[in-house]
Image (cartoon, rainbow, N blue to C red; front, side):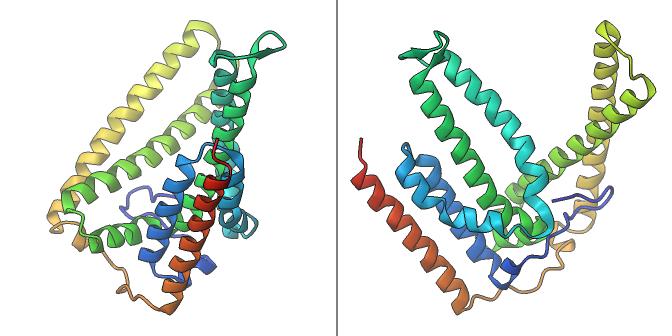
Length: 249
């Protein structure tokens, strides 16, 4: 998902999932993500990972190729903290056995839920997501807050990455306090620039009469294939709940 340097809308990624109504994709993805996030054992989680694994192996456009490695860096850090701080029996006199089990569960859930939401929701692009939220009855103020927050996060990440690369190219041997000073100046400049851009974006929204002035989406149309998609997700959720009853701790 990439944001235009000066525009408001994110580019949608064209995939085979575009045959489904965006509302069906968002509802199914959120419902399954909530169920997966609540699981506390591996057998039900493995039952619920079938659809995300299918989406992973049919990764069109390589959306997950760049996101998952970065995501797992954070996941490994969280797993290490859990193994060090979680109480219980220790192995190698340092790491917790229960912490290791919990860490594996957390990292696996993080990957499965991320794959599901990226392929089913993020690939829609900001414009279609806004259209779906509007059809769900969310107020325009809330939609503006959600969309601008998402936009600013991606813009901050892109600009910070560009400035870090620029500092590295101009001063590759920078160390110690000078490195921290350069990072502080870079971060301050990025935040000021982003604040100015956010104000101009808000002014543009007001001048166009709200989010409707940016919308160019086609009308949403629910069909039988969308009902089948929802039924398949409901069946998967039912199997997960059945597994939870069988493997109740």
